[in-house]
Image (cartoon, rainbow, N blue to C red; front, side, top):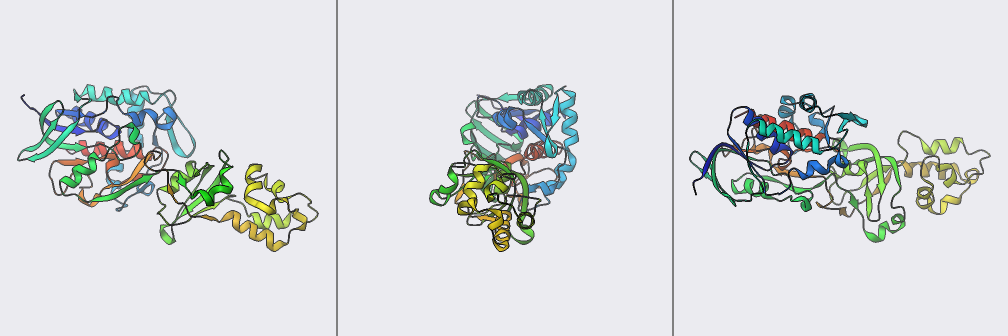
Length: 396
């Protein structure tokens, strides 16, 4: 079988891979896009509840976690949320903004997938899908890829295979294996944007609250590394979920505590003391103005039935302190099956900042989630996919 030869081979037809292939092909490069999956871009398809939170209006390096916090700056500045919005608009995709700058399709995430495929077709990208890459080898003038559909050669190779999150959609460690094969360092991968779980015995008093949600401040870390989000928190049978927990999970380290402020923006202790005179209501009733009643009854325990007028000021202030700083030590996370993204990946110190090309292996690039750049919840990881892909493709 005669092997085909291309300027660029992109492995991985997800957000980053589709974007990179389309941009490179429209720049006049011959591009082949390879993916082992039968269905195109499944993570885009399920994202945002099926409407794809495709970017965020406000994106900067501070919205990302990496061993090198400045690495993402160059790519993010080369292709901004405004640039992607312009692309979406050019395809006449209607969208809307939710809270905190999050942008979603009005209709369906399928529109983003079709847009990216159309961009690839506009540049005459060659498709090999479904097609498994069996091996990758460096040769004098590029790379040889042995695939289930036969061998091919490419002067440049782009790894856009994503991370380990949601293996049921086909996620694998292929990209990390390729990085290690060529001697690149990898930051240990771990689940991110993921629910936190607790020891069954310690969580037993709260398991009955499954389904209860409220806005809370959620913190983790110490000193300058401390991070805090104010978002909704959801109680589950095994622990905590919801946007606030997913956000902080990316910063949480095993064995550390997280801290919940169950009444952000209020001074509960002093407010209770001020409203105490003559108030015969039970504490659970008073706090029902802040929380779902079930939470108040369970969280307050024996104090739930205490009448406010009978409670010593000291007790009310201590209660306020606990409400604003409830410390919990998770046993772990719900794992990659429930994680939205992977934290860790190819060490950014191994890559050129502007092109995401390997410093050790010329012509080898890594983009998107496989790189040690992990965004917040809210469209940031998609923007990293678009930006890193554009920066890479623009360097050819």
